[in-house]
Image (tube, rainbow over all chains, first blue to last red; front, side, top):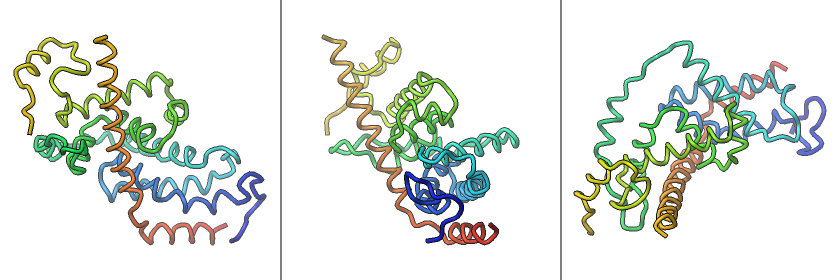
Length: 194
Length: 48
């Protein structure tokens, strides 16, 4: 193992040599944002180059993964702003209609879940991956995305609600049934036990 | 009473959603990292 510059007293290693350990997580996060493998890997590549060349700005002892994720999502959003590309989502929408009810054990068919997840707006997918899947705290996620903690919470909760709708997880009489029209529909469609 | 029931349901739903999120995410993170990234890191090291 080679060491460049001063060793980080906390981890005992140059953070550059640790980049490799974060590649799988970076690829998963990139995929959740781009929703497409080739763009995800391009995004990861840009992130690595930026992280490498700006490593002097990384504060030793802080969370390297959070720092890398922040670079990745900032790169994603600035590229998106530049191109202003409207991504057609017709495939995803079509596939979402095929979403089925959960299996008996409460697990969803993985593909249905993926398809539904891809329907969510960027910032909801991001919030859910950060706090729901990768285990960052709401505070960490707020720092990483540059918004208030409450904003991250509401994005994550809106994302969860939307997923529940797309996956038909609202079991008739529960949840946030504040909308009377929704209540009426749900009452008319009591779930059939299988 | 009713409120508490709703909260419980909401918590259960949140748990279910997050469990599925983690499953999908873990599946993605367990994929093998393509060679291009190891080559990129190698190239960056050599440029130092």
